[in-house]
Length: 238
Image (cartoon, rainbow, N blue to C red; front, side, top):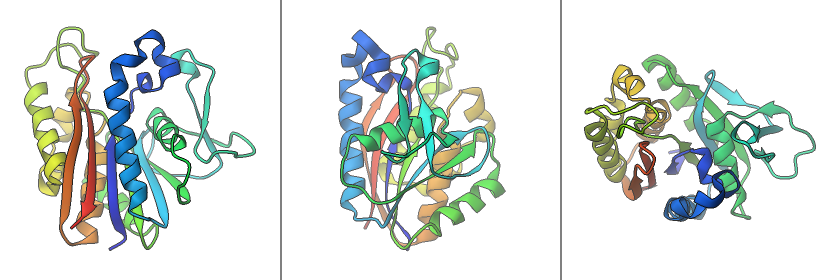
């Protein structure tokens, strides 16, 4: 049973106060929920912490690796492991935000990163779930992913009537650690709704199933302040 705990967080660049600027207080509750999820993740006493999120391809990112928030107007580099001697590989946004969240907490185990392509199919996701399970004897996963981006006329994907029911189903699945519901998310609909979390959530569900046993979930946050759904959840083995 290598996977022992998981935290699910979103990855909007606005989560970083330097990026949000004067709007930073609008996401204070979201940041607090993410911090709670990460603290619980570390409390599971893992021997390795795996950061998982969407990227241009599927596969591990070798350290040293660094993300940058320059595309969002802030000259801020975020190393996957603090104190790395050079930039190394480039982290995608999801893993950059994940590394930033981890950097807010001092004591933590060795960290490794895995990215998954947004259009990854079932076989690719299943293989990656197996790799997650083989990462260590006690693996804790920080999984980054946003919900739909179609919650209203000002949303990045404009308004789509399917977005709210989709997000409600995801929220319920994360709250209940419902592996079947996450694995059943339709990749086509997820893409149409611009739900960046579909592939990482399904890798998590596959890894949790492979680990065996029962899982307890808790939804710590559910909002869509800018027309994009943000979920924070904490999972632990029962």
